[in-house]
Image 1 (cartoon, rainbow, N blue to C red):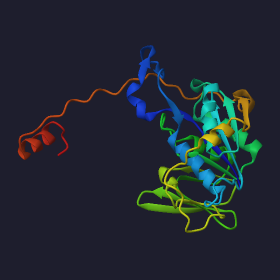
Image 2: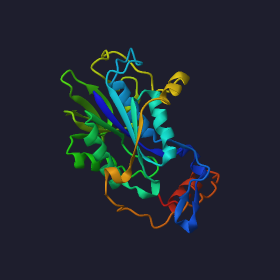
Image 3: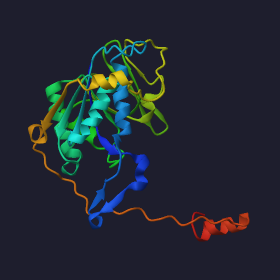
Image 4: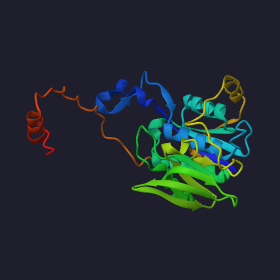
Length: 275
């Protein structure tokens, strides 16, 4: 099985308190912020690795995992991290972050997917910076691929189809997809029993969460193929999304201690107006 995983680097959400607004509200100043792989994209990569291995022998890749990102030269760190974790090849589409929106990203990925012809395309359900949750859906429409969103479980069946459990209101909806197909994943997909290749025993349990690369794998990743393409090579789509201004959220008022239940109820009713 050949799987293509789209990755995005985002400012570390744990450092959100360091975000500054620059240019009179015209932009977000990322100076001093640390970059990391979008968490949901990390889950997509872990899913791809589990689908292309026997869980009992994770060092042996029984298929190919290709990772792709759009971004400047610095975003290659994101790709090298994925290569160290177990991906086989990487592709970087050279572009500045402010020149991209969901539509452009989807059109660029469409061209890469058409060239690579993977069996499965995996993405995180959304990026934690914009939270727009649109690239996967646009891309599936452009490719005319069957799609499952918010995947919590994925099992490869003997016939090569994927049985995907989607998180929906009130439970799980199971869909069977025939490759080539596209799946966006949610956080529960990296639970121990959530992903299984047809090579992995039904009762096998992976470790909880995503895997981390040991030092030898990090060194080896420096020699793995990393191809660079210009954005103009893969799409002529133009920006259709713009931001008018940015502002930090307002500060929260300090809490108060009430003397009894009566005062609490009064504040809930007359100040918070929740009763």
